Length: 307
Picture (spheres, rainbow, N blue to C red):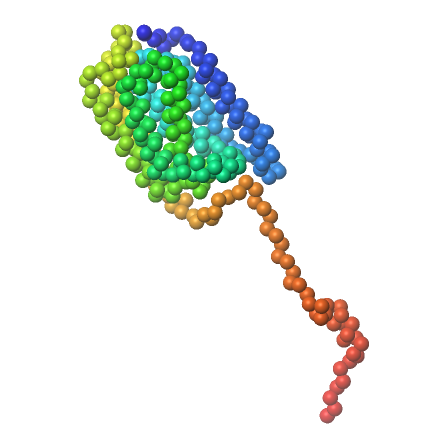
């Protein structure tokens, strides 16, 4: 099936997703936030608003026509770009948009949720599940079946995005106690940049048809199926690695500014006012200053010594 990139296609499910995300964001900011944050304080910062709306726009562009149609029916390299947006760029943008009070409200209300989130976002757990799922989603059987089943494809994308959110929490999550130190983040991202090398290299050197779902008679823009596979492998192996290394470089130069000691205890949604220091209890025999003055007046002037 050939795709005409000028032939607009409607994707109602994508529009419902975008509307739902916007509705949740506005509800958090305008309905829940004013009830949680101190009076007179804005629930979100200007930077958080920019991250949110930028992530929404990018999510819409990556999910709707024409990227959706080309990535599913013609070019696997476009599909690879879409996956990079879903896993490396959009999730950290949404995490940077989440205010701390909202994250604590979602996580700390239930002890089981708190323990589960804490365990799933441990660097070893988050990094390992992200790498394994990323490798599994390039299995030819899974890719070919996802091209035949729309609901299955949507489920795979949902699982990938959820996995990416867990992966990025130790780097830019809204809860500071779940973040790693700057050196730890750099090592974490460096290891993550190495994991796509094997499947990326495999696609880059593959000469036969790896994904039969993309072996269509009429090729978009004249790109052969082999060139498509090799391009996807190079994007996966080099594009994602370059992006993560840029982030590592940014973290390296920002490291001196972040070397500040923080209170290791988790913060609370509302800080309780400190109690005023209590005055020491007075003994019953202790005289007040007024009583002292009255006693001195009754005693009269002190007698003078005679020479």
